Each structure stands twice: as structure tokens, then as C-alpha cells.
Length: 53
Image (tube, rainbow, N blue to C red; front, side):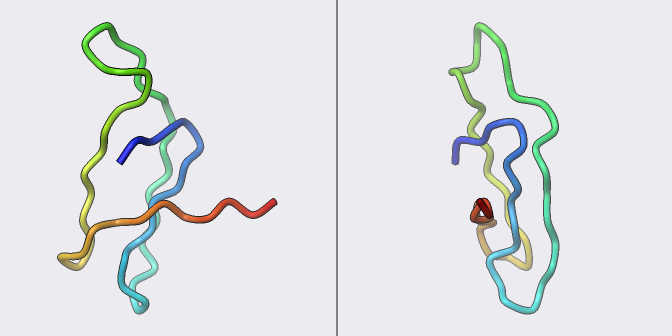
């Protein structure tokens, strides 16, 4: 998935409270405007946390 600075990834299972926060956005000639991240937790793909507005 594409991630941007400030995005939060959460575990895909309901009983796991792991959160990963993207602290720096990828800026590189070899990387598109946003890095593609593959993250798993409890053998499930992590999901982008909905931003509260």
C-alpha cells in the first residue's frame, strides 16, 4: 500500500492493538512519490487507520 508521512497502520485483527506510524515520507528518484509498504501483523495484512477529522 502507499503510505504518506503521518499515516498510521493498524493490525488487521480485532484483538491486536499494534500501530505503526509513518514518520518520514519516502523521497527518492528510485521510489515513486510514496513508498509502497507491505506490513503484516499476526499473519494478517496491516491496514491504514481511518483518520479522525
